[in-house]
Image 1 (cartoon, rainbow, N blue to C red):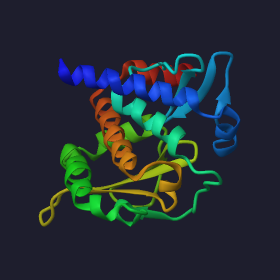
Image 2 (image 1 turned 180 degrees about the vertical axis):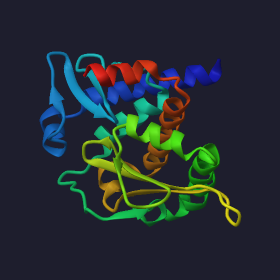
Image 3 (image 1 turned 90 degrees about the vertical axis):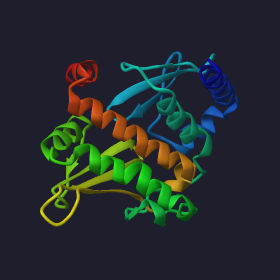
Length: 214
């Protein structure tokens, strides 16, 4: 109960923060945002998420988890004026201020992703395609996906063989932390893995149906 209460407190706080943002400044920083009658439309992976301009509540064609909401709100809050992509992809620990989090990222994200899809690269590829992935000539499975329109992420996977365990890597634009707090990059990676698992396991018929209809 305490954890649920903490989550609800977090939601209320971040919705309140969103309502204090200068809407015009936000649109200058993130020109791909779309205004609606109710508020703003944010493209998150393959889904359009609407944020109510009066309450800060999020509406989406999927059931957003708390950390999905965190990804969206922290992007809007932390994005710097003049942020632009570098066009160079680097591992997480080479992002600005990311080095201290590198070992935990490897254990909690890269090793987890590799173990989850060891022996089933086809499932990972199917999930990446469902998440709008663009194929890359790297790894046994390599795709680039868009978390947000200006925030791509590359997913690389090598399946286990007789000598090595399965391995995975996630690459980000070198300027990723100009768009979002470095700790939120970890959350983005974690939620990408959640959605890849759901898509691979076929537990996201709603998301796939919405994608087809849109």
